[in-house]
Amino acid sequence: MTRAHIADPHLITKIKLNQVDQIRQCVGANYCIDRQYQGLDVLCIQNAATSRESTMPHIIEKTSGPIRNVVVVGGGPGGMEAARVSAERGHNVTLLEKGSELGGQITLAAKAPQRDQIAGITRWFALELARLGVDIQFNTEANADSILALNPDVVILAVGGTPFITQNPKWGGEDGMVVSSWDILNGDVEPGKNVLVYDTICEFSGMSVADYLASKGSLVELVTDDIKPGAAVGGTTFPTYYRSLYQQEVIMTSDMMLEEVYREGDKFVAVLENEYTGQKEERVVDQVVVENGITPSEALYYALKEGSVNKGRSILKRNTTPSHSPALLSTTKPTGKGTCCSVSVIAFLSVIPTQQFTMRYVFVRTSKPKFEVLQGSRRAALRSPDRR
Picture 1 (cartoon, rainbow, N blue to C red):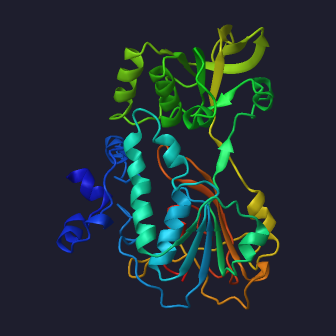
Picture 2 (picture 1 turned 90 degrees about the vertical axis):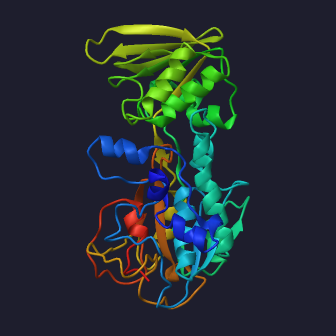
Picture 3 (picture 1 turned 180 degrees about the horizontal axis):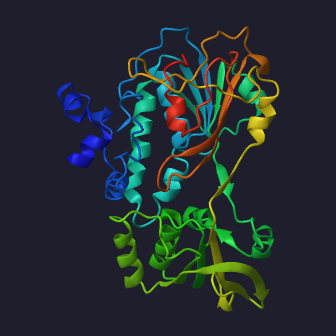
């Protein structure tokens, strides 16, 4: 029950109040324990307030300011949290999701053999958004005109990004020479018989796609330019992956960089270079999968930025207190609705939920800057008590 209370410290109270459906259940990610073993503060993969109670309350109070119309674009972890917090504050919230279900990359990550429990995060969010009356519009790809047609006071862009397989032109990402882990896990691309997975991130995503491919019968070599595959996966978690990968005879190769991929007949040749000696090796395979992180989708943000009151900036107060709950909005009421000039745009540009929901962000606010700029995770930004 220790991890259960890390995920939701109000678990017992909610049982007593017959609020069982509101309990945020532990999904067994072990992010908390892995951090403890590293000598870091114990955080939760899904509850941002855990260990941050001095500045970030678990219980969100209603706003004492005006009620806003909030439009959230993107139903991934960032968008769901933004919608939840806004609704808890008492604002009117519309969430636009271009797909047919919530979850974003959580849904993607949960398709891997060792990560299915992570889908519980989305289930909890879905229940909470329904309870709070958030208007969720599925199969809706937002653009600037459709967003403004909803007469928002605040727009929150949590549109995520796309796999960054084009960083090295020699990989042939734009020519279909390599595919991403998303392509494999989504089922958009069938697993090859003999597959090389190149992982530059060394977290859950590369290990997960290798495990997934092996479980589908592929012969897999997992290559990384780091000291070992999964180097950034926590100490309580990577043994589970290693056990599975070794049992499925996955070859694990470290200290090798993917320099180039070229076609030879119906095969692909992956050119690897040793990070230390420069010695090159080649692998002849049926498929090359690259896990190289995510590049943010920024087009919608820039489409709204120039016309907004705050011009793409957000000012957040550093010193916060738990006496107020988070709010996403400025303290100044916009002068009108339905035009970009009265809209606050908050953009979450990149999310990697395969381990934690940290985002690179750019904020826009509706009022004149009067606080210090806070550099940090989107969690702190979402929960700044001075943004009513």
